[in-house]
Amino acid sequence: MTDPKPAVSSDVMTLAGELGAERSKPGWSTFSLALNEEQKEIRDWAHTFAAEVIRPAASEWDEREETPWPVIQEAAKIGLYGLDMNVNLFVDPTGLLMPVVHEELFWGDAGIAMSLMGTGLASSAIFSNGTPEQWSQWLGRCYGTPDDVRVAAFCSSEPGAGSDVSAIRTRATYDARTDEWVINGQKAWATNGGIADIHVVVATVDPSLGTKGQAAFVVPRSEVRGLEQGTKLRKHGLRASHTADVFFDNVRIPASNVLGGKEKLDARLAKAREPRESGGRNASMATFEMTRHLVGAQAIGIARAAYEVALEYAKGREQFGRPIIDNQGIAFKLADMALEIDAARLLVWRAANMSSALMRGETPDYRHGEGSMAKLKAGEVAVRVTEEAIQILGGNGYTREYPVERMHRDAKIYTTFEGTSEIQRLVIARAISGMRIR
Image (cartoon, rainbow, N blue to C red; front, top):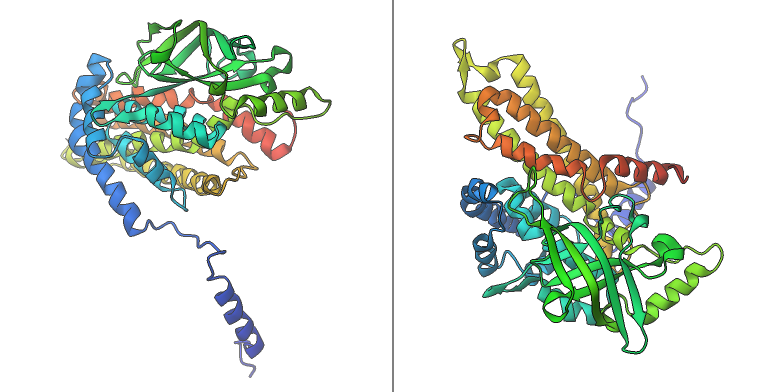
């Protein structure tokens, strides 16, 4: 009788041993879904702050619809808000620390967490488009100090230019006589718009080039004239996060305030004017590429919070003499909620791991729209899970006595801002097809 187990060649075993030793070297990365001890410690620290400080204050600041400065100050004093913390989260070879902390804070409350993390969009724009000198000059000012906390604003969208960044009409004109940029226009839906000191503004320099003729500028409100806050928006959700229009009326800033520097901008514009040249990355898109998976992590935090409320409620609520989770109609809803949250998190973590290329000065290779996949899936999961949570709680879920109605209101924006679900599908479709789908 023939032995069913094939003999293993000693040469193969030797080869396997040699390859194993080679691939244990630093040049090879190890795939793991397990957080290391330091990552767990930081995650638990953020979770404790979310549970003990953010969550108890959530309802109050949602009702007040005001920036929760006391919470931001408390976060700054313990080191959870500020440039040092942002760098700490960014400098992680796995790329996971940033989304892990975002998820925990938004698990606490999305409105307050957005007030804490909204500055990150402006600082990401400075980091992705700016020079090392500009990092030193502006990044610290985005956050202020524990004794004098600040927030920053990223101003890209306009009344007629949301998903369509090519429609941006805010204009930056170079005045050679004074070596200044003069900015005129209106920005809409700006998180921290008007209350921030540092505003990062995307403006058109050469309208004939479309998005290739745009650049990002640092506008320090305390040093200029002509920057005014417009209408503060009263929103469906994220009420504790300040959102407003911002007007720029002949706002003058030094030429050096263009991110990347004027020489680099001039070279990029000249290249864009040449036939068949791409002219480089668009300032808005470069920022959104860095943050889409983080937006997905925020949505997961909201979804997870709603799921946990619904699960505990279903285990404790009795109807017809038994807990409602004992009914398949409820139990299957919860099973699907848990499944979808975990699936979305895996997409976010994949994109986050890919984003770690930024630490090496490289551009993440999102060749199939992985960042958009993460944001799209997580945003739609958050809406679906929070809606199901209301359904499980029944009439109680529709009242403000329970937090799921607020979570549902907060979740909805995640299918809209930083690229609607439709735009994310367009990005993915273009990436997988290589075609300019419209």
